[in-house]
Image 1 (cartoon, helix red, strand yellow):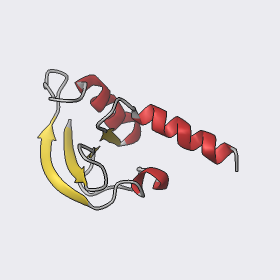
Image 2: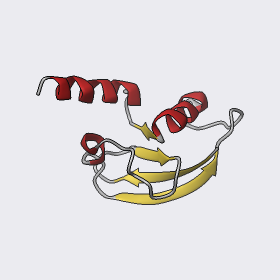
Image 3: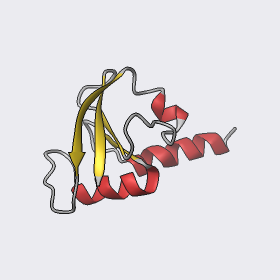
Image 4: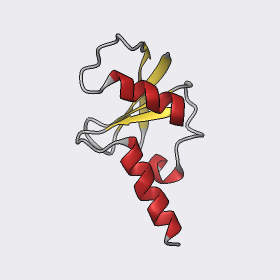
Length: 93
């Protein structure tokens, strides 16, 4: 699967992988607003056999297929955890 990787300036080691180049439409506003300035880093063809330095390839592929994006954070927080926190916050409104 072809993906497009962008460096985020607000947090060290934070990257966002997109299924479609420059298409941030499916990134929830609450997440998008935390990215800061994004800078294109690289285009990568990821297959299940691809070895990624800091991410689990299956997780990245799953998130790209399910959400059209994947976020690489310095810690161990997942996109699912972020999405659940946003949903919980929205339900309290």
